Image (cartoon, rainbow, N blue to C red; front, side):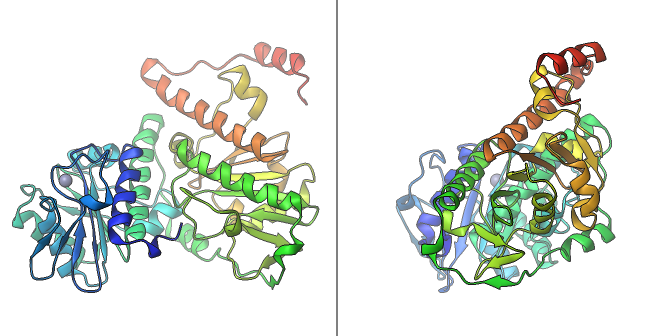
Length: 431
Ligand SMILES: [Zn+2]
């Protein structure tokens, strides 16, 4: 959905509903606002249940201070106004108390967004505003001072977080990726020592956006198979979002259409809701006119070229697998027979491999070894079709979570070699 066409009332209600639905706020915590071209601020109301909030509940505070609406504005309105006064480029603010960000807030630790490229791209350096009484001018001044210093994401001491953006979706994606970053670091610290991206790695990633030559095509040329795959990709991306395997701004899905063509998710893309016409066709190294494929397009192209049996590829950033990725550890699949059967041994690839070492990528990610942890860049799985790739992603994340959760219980005990050999024989797995 293109949120640019929504009225602020609709956009605020929809975004707040999404934040509540994905457990990133409680019913009483959190507030969002949009500054419109008249200088009026549309903001969520005070004392209204976040679980049932309607567009008509949204309040408008006019530039002269007049309040229009059936409720008073959020009690945190003063800091929203202070942020807009401090930063004319910010047109929307998201404030909430999601648990992992609160964990950083109460430990007085500033998250380092250099865990994966997306968290850094969205958040850059994160600011830290000292404690102030909720709703006070003092708190507004402290938060606004951090925005004035150039931060777009500011952690509030003993409170939560504020993210600003050029529109509400921009602020929301920043907020959501920062929560993912904090969740990942907490899980990574259960597992080991998280590693952060270097400047060289961030540079490498920022230069990875490729411009493919384009081709024009008529919609009437689309085959039934292509239509089916476009719809499958949409369904699986949205399912991945609902299952917590993707965030709104992370993750790439692709599916092979023919020997030399495949479909891939575009950028930018909100994974919450995807339409078949947004998916990009890449054919003979050329891209459908008017669309921009994911950063991962060249690595997917290399895999399809080298492995005729691969028909679907997913890059994803689910928080437990991501903890392994950031600790530069592979995920042990000797946990349950199902994990070993579906995933076999999971590779551990250096960060650079998916950007500049395609020979090593295609040699080590195959249907025999269908999953890999990419250092500081999530996980990658391949399949004979979209369902098998998605299934592997779910099993991988389940295994990662079980291993992390087993740590306080003394850690997982891998199945021994004799058990694995029996599984290989019983299920006729390739040796
Ligand atoms: Zn608050």
